[in-house]
Image 1 (cartoon, rainbow over the protein chains, first blue to last red):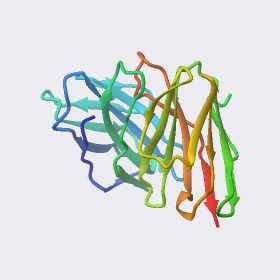
Image 2 (cartoon, rainbow over the protein chains, first blue to last red):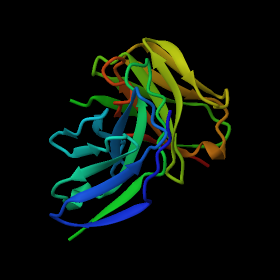
Image 3 (cartoon, rainbow over the protein chains, first blue to last red):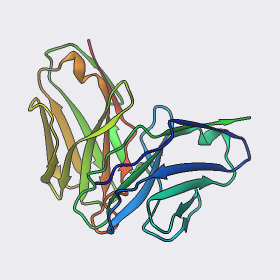
Image 4 (tube, chains in turn orange, yellow):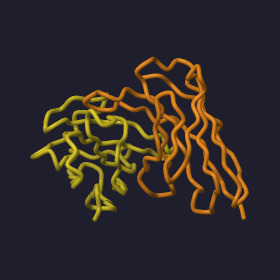
Length: 112
Length: 114
């Protein structure tokens, strides 16, 4: 599985958009980009995934560059409850099990 | 309804003891996992089962033995507990063909070995 690089920490003002970048320059053609977050003392929570098109759901938007070497997770209106560690992961879709590797992630702190 | 549940939530025990952690998912998924998150917050996969069959077995001491009685359950038994086993253990599940990396995690079991 390809590795990812994320900034260790970011701050965001409450109500503003939080843009979390991720580099995955060694991603292969059949690998998807997945985002998770882990709020303190809870299990990781799946947010969104995509292959090459931009994706949006009720939680966030995912923007993937045309060369697929990087992506950005966007939380359009961050709230204090969005403070968490955000993990960007790449992995194959049609495998029996996702041998996903969670890196250090980005600690997002949303401030009032 | 809790999708992925684990018991117990907290487990405090002494070195040398044997303990088990249970996991159940009601999502109908075929694949289940065990992860370990240590004090540095690094989340590392330990095992994965697909339809009761072991398919991922990372470099984990053989004191750790997963057991899957059916595809909705994956239990983790740990023999001869050591101080270094103290961590939070997460169970997860996913459905092959619908995004194997789209995993749903349980709330975690915080194991403290004294």
